[in-house]
Image 1 (cartoon, rainbow, N blue to C red):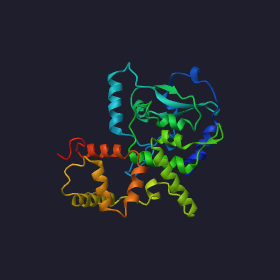
Image 2 (cartoon, one colour):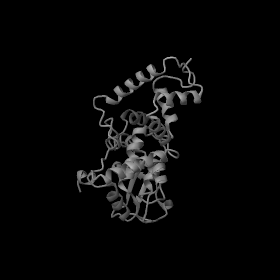
Image 3 (cartoon, one colour):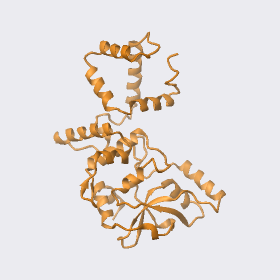
Image 4 (cartoon, rainbow, N blue to C red):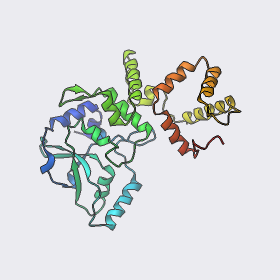
Length: 292
């Protein structure tokens, strides 16, 4: 089957094919090292890297790969952390699907190493999605907020079912797998329901779903600059916002007709404070010391 034909299948269909080649088993007796050539890459299923900035699923950071290769060449007796794989015992020729460690795998293919250390998951192909993206147990290139939203939207719109248990995956499972908040999942679920009830096709891209477009002309940057200027004009004498009550009263006085929308936005975004800290760091601003 061609790669194009595989890519045109839904995530649910791809997982179903993997489930057909899997059965519960104990991986303890499997080899701890495998030939690099035996590792099968399925970034279309297990690598959440696609985003709107040009990266596609399966893309790797070549600079990072090169540094890994230099490390391997300089230490021929030393291995890197094992990659995480899913064993498919029912496949005609036993398959080992790469879940985590795409950069490490790429590094080993470019040096004089015929084998790579591996670690096996003890879950089925659907649950392996979470293992592949669990940032709490694996050191990896962290997904951006945009990447998490795209991955969460993909999992949600697919309506995944764990084919071993026959049960639909839960919102909590999507939160843990994609790294998004429960409030984001609820918001996205409402948007998905709204689109389906309207009879429209469900966009593959989360930002298309919420109507942000592709930002090809830097429209979001222009919007940020415009909003920032409006806020400066609106609060010309407020060097500090240390009193939350005064700030709340100022918001209500300034935009009484929009306060419900503002409250809804704040309630839906439990990660707003975290986003502010991230953006402040990117802009070189200290949220603790700013304001004089």
